Image (spheres, rainbow, N blue to C red):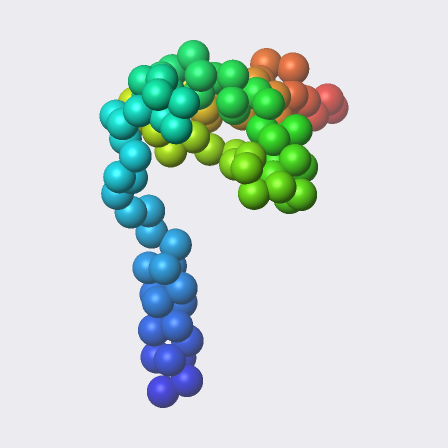
Length: 96
């Protein structure tokens, strides 16, 4: 019974982390500009460390732009993050 409750709690926790639909996709930004695409996603992914720290102290800065073109923005965002935190020079090989 305890194992069943643990499994149910784990499934409920995972279900709470599931992504939902983004109502801001393909809509204009507050400044009236069009949705952000791949290049903006790449840039915002690269500046994520700075943006995250700033977002802790203000409500006007967020780490992800919801007014985006969808998948292409996401690709740029993840690529930008990987360039900063990983990339070709971030991985080290074990020498032995």
